[in-house]
Length: 165
Image (tube, rainbow, N blue to C red):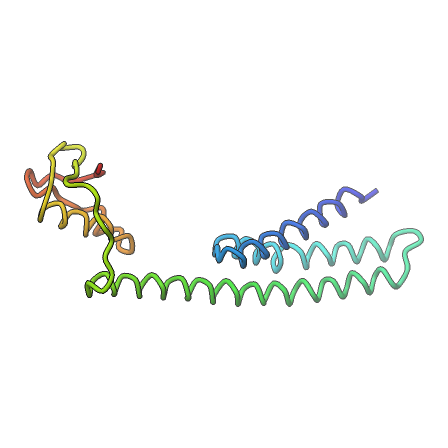
């Protein structure tokens, strides 16, 4: 009668495990967060429902009930471990990004700029040399959205929405 619920529960277990594995493999924090949500939020409650159904099923036995209880406790601890992994990965990736930004600002690391000039949209002015470097430096600032949203063209002083190299 409840085979669909059990099948969906197994699919959620599989999805949480895959998200955790590939998130940890690729250091992809959004996938680890999805795994945390599945492992700690959905699965323990769903497993408790499986315990209730297996205990009240005809021909149910104590082994399956205790097995699902052990699985529920395991999922709970895996969920907490995933939370720790998510926090560690996020802090580590942010520290790497800050370190890279510091190295760029100290001129210890540079990124080669191929274009000789850029085009600012919507005003369509071509920028090069110092104007281009100023606009690119502000445009590359991904950590402060308010800075990136208020870039002005050095020629006409209009707001730049997009640059094309």
